[in-house]
Image (tube, rainbow, N blue to C red; front, side, top):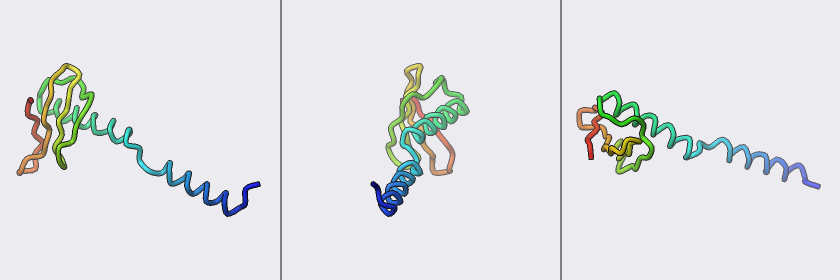
Length: 84
């Protein structure tokens, strides 16, 4: 039989496990955000299927159509996409 203290510790552990954000969910959000930035800047992409972070606010995004873009925030604070 599980003691009350053990059951409480197990419940708190499970709650902490499920309360943290999953990396997969963050990845999906990042891919959607990069797709939106590239689209708003008028670059052909379709959909970003993968991304690699180079630095804070600096990613290399690979698109469904085969294009790759470096998406970053410049010194003026504007989003920029450069074809790779």
